Amino acid sequence: MPSPFAALEARVNRIAGAKLANAEAVIGGFADPVAVIFDDRYVDPLTMSATAPQVQCDGALVPGIAVGRSVAVAGRTYSVAEIHPAGAGWLTLILEATLP
Image (cartoon, rainbow, N blue to C red; front, top):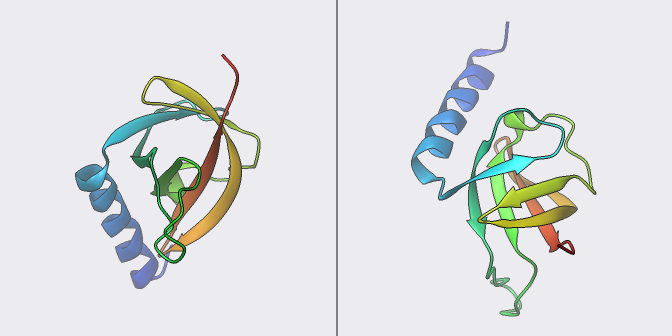
């Protein structure tokens, strides 16, 4: 059984994902679409320079996610270029466009 904090964190992540998601992504290797926060024009706040598109999602929904997996979101297909823990169980997946 998960600790009380882990259970609370999982519950908060499910609620946040449901309320804040602006897209659904189909991630290669996972059967169900995942609610994500998608940003195709992400700007790094420290450098103020544009970077690659990204999605943020609850890491519990994509256990074992790996670089190179396909991600279909907003009518385009990408592959995962980098994976960064965003804190409290969330992941930021940096994407790169794939050829059609």
